[in-house]
Length: 109
Image 1 (cartoon, one colour):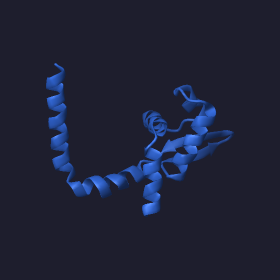
Image 2 (cartoon, rainbow, N blue to C red):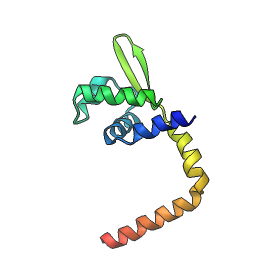
Image 3 (cartoon, rainbow, N blue to C red):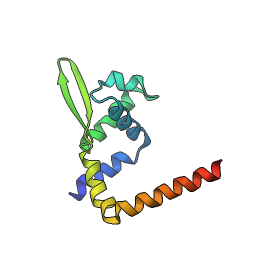
Image 4 (tube, one colour):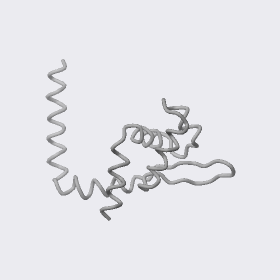
């Protein structure tokens, strides 16, 4: 279990990989070409990042003819949330995060 979580944390540590996950969240089931078209990364870089995301089980693929579609798998992120955020009382953290956002908003205006 810890080895799997280590892979997820490693995958999430990179901004480019988080950006790929965000793109899949916005429009699930994209090909490599579609993902490359929305990102400022080379095709090789996107391929490399997708391999890390697949190894962490954050992205799954499905072949449709010659196309390989990439899908977001949010389950590992939920497992992290349950294990790491849940035990720190998510409700209390949400109140603190809302308060912080409100205070920052007052400072900006």
